[in-house]
Image 1 (tube, rainbow over the protein chains, first blue to last red):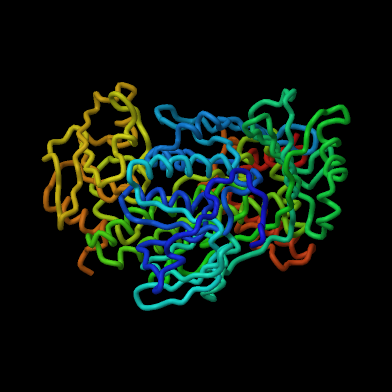
Image 2 (image 1 turned 135 degrees about the vertical axis):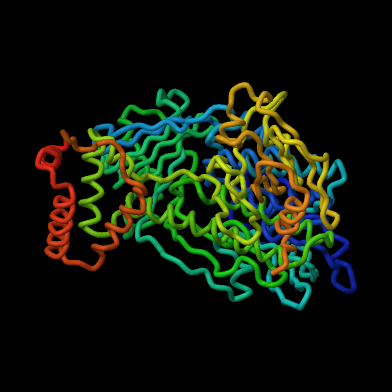
Amino acid sequence: MQERYPLAFKLYPYQRSVDQDAITPARHKVIIVGGGPVGLACALDLGRQGIAVLVLDDHEGIGQGSRAICFSKRTLEIADRYGCARPMLEKGVVWNVGKVFQGDHQVFSFNLLAESGHKYPAFINLQQPYFEKYLFDQIVKEQAKGAPIEIRGKNRLDAVEVKADHTVLSITTPDGPYELEANWLIGCDGAGSPLRGMLGLGFEGREFQDSFLIADIKMPASTFPTERWFWFEPWFKSGASTLLHKQPDDIWRVDFQIGWDVDRTEELKEENIRKRLDAMLGPEADYELVWSSIYTFQCRRMKDFRTGRVIFAGDAAHQVSPFGARGANSGVQDVDNLGWKLGLVLRGQAPESLLDTYNEERIHGADENILNSSRATDFISPKSKISHIFRNAVLELAAHHPFARALVNSGRLSLPCVYDGLSLNGTDALEGGPACARVGSACADAPVAGGYLLESLGGDFVMLTINAGAPENVEADGIVARRLALKTADDPSGALAARYLGTAQSAVYLIRPDQHIAARWDQFDAAALRAALLKACGKAKK
Amino acid sequence: MSQLITTPHFASPDEFYASLIAVHEGLTEVESAAFNARLLLVLANHIGNAEVLGEALKIAASPR
């Protein structure tokens, strides 16, 4: 089997499985295609719920190249629930300040650190292989505790046959082919998803006519601060725009916008990359070129992320431009959304139709990401003369007039989307309740006695009560929401009250396992809670 | 006395910018310039106040 890329970490060398000697194909509950960040996170989510899951990957570990380097607070919060956020935070570079330049002058700077009282920072920079490695390490820990997760290296999916309640997979290995059956098949096989191709499913959207050259350079002696620097039309002329951003291990990510009509082989020659870098950093700069790549990008998605027993997540389902850190981060949110729903369906606690709400909610998220990332791309890479004139007018004004800074768009950084108005939402009946905690939102963190709110929520349904009486549990159809009882005084900083009470005196929130808010009231009402709990599990009467 | 607002005032800056660029799609340079002129006159009439308009003219003439 041909390697498509070199490995950063060899983690799951090929081993012959008993399934390869089976006379009739072995049937698995859940098979995940692709062992990238989304596939591994999905395996972790399901395995931690005790659901047997098999990951097939056509390599034996994690590929080289920094690729996704910017991980958002929401991804860290989800990783925290999975148990692997700490190494991310320890290794990652925390940054808050961004600067925007045009030519040779600074247009303005911004600081992301708007709010305190969160366990995790707004963003960390971390090379994608580290993120995947920490997910994998956590999988090994969960396996040791009995989580039924298996990863098979050098198992390449070559064909799939869709049946009414399962799929039949043809796999190629170094020992030859074999077949497997899957009750549920999850495609996490990236933007070029072979699985999507095998099923003949479309991937519609826009292609942007520009290319970007990535150079990762190691500069141990650099005095650049830990900030995101973005140049429009930089004075050093190494690209139509340039991004400089710090990663761990003294490595800097440099992105040059080099135009549409380029000779890739020529541009990727080290001497030519060095010409651009030397112009930017000065001829005396000392650096080592660690990794380089040229990318073009598309903003597009599948029409549906679910077709019967096949579900797509991450880049396989939707693709965005890199501006705004919406790729890997949204893939992790897909998994976060899918995991508990598939768990309920597999345990027989919710109808299969609950999975249609994965489709509904994550398409809502993907469309928001595509919109934001298309707008950023249009600003960075104007596609007409008039668009270019407006862009530069904004930049000129922004240097001296704050109003224009709101229009400068070098990437609107990823925030979790709010599932406004979607099917699983229950009642929003908290008068004076803050908009940031409206039904459909992901819960914002807040400090509470002995830790943080989100870690106390965990990954089950929770009834959060603030200054309100309620029983310890609410149950409907065998699904339990455990109570987390808090008072305003549990957070002397006032963040809990500001984020969950607003002007209300008391509140009762029903929170889903993915920590999105399902419904809210000012007082406990058993019938209302049970109804909202059923609705959040896709069991509402239509 | 009225003053020109130069602090952020857009309800939805990205949305406005996207619709502004979209409306120019397919226009020739002359058509684009004419569109901008019409847009400016419409907005200037909405503002009305001579002092505010004067200040806006000054900023646009020398943004730095």
